[in-house]
Image (cartoon, rainbow, N blue to C red; front, side, top):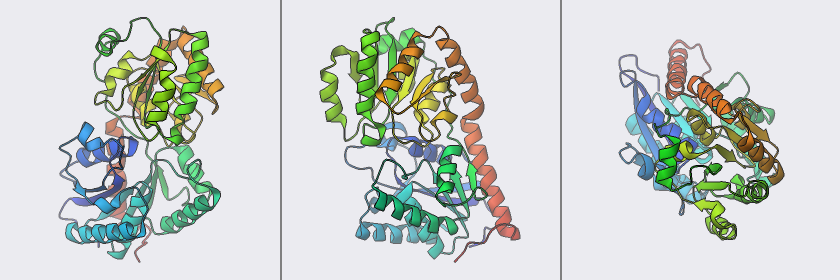
Length: 392
């Protein structure tokens, strides 16, 4: 399929599921934000897993999306083959110029379907990677082999951060020339004052508040979060941890938090996270693996410094000592970073610096513009023969 010059460029976007998180947020922004005079967009997505929050229901119920139930996260040969056939059928109906896939399973199914239909431009975004902390060595090695093969048949690869790109290139998944780094983008912070936010959340005005927003699952290490909070409370007994999220470790987290009394509040998923950032003194990430955490970007946009473990491209959002603290992956290091941040006389200055940088580096406008530029460049190269022709 060669892109036609007399109509908008057709983009088919494929994602395994729209659970609350960075990939779903970015897909939503790109589904709505591209210039309608230049681009026509179709979005395919699977169903969220049991126990996961549905981003569409929670944040954007009117988002136009075609649901393919077998495209969900779980890997099962029968479902995956049905998903392949469904995506292939939809490609033939929509006739996209570009198939752009997000997340691992959708990246496999969507790119193979695009190749089988002769779509000449295939793009895949790595919002992170599964190389560390998810699987054992045998499965991880198999994933690397699959991604290497798929990279050869992909016109362009996108990574959300430089470290994410470098990790992938280091194991032979693509090369620097095929990658474009496009960080996530977020909306400007809602206009909530600290006092009004704390009043609405029923948080005392003067207590130090740490906010965690994210999935409560093993890779995010909620156990490390609570261990760090226990250590912090030894030094700051009036500190409060507010957790906005859910996941398969929710009940375990709830049980441990109950033993820590009123120092922990578990709110579940929240529709208005801006209220949480307005009430926060700092945000925290305790993960073993990340791409580029949108939580840190949202907090920075709200003028809130972050404390994060040194994983993925987190240190491309939080600049250590300038907009927050980047620490080792241990409860002791996280607690030390939080204590330093909450006791810092420069905390507001760090938050202000984070906000200035976020507005420049992580705006929605920049996210959309970089994708538009990439799409138009790839289409131009396809028409002129100036880029790679990976069609099979």
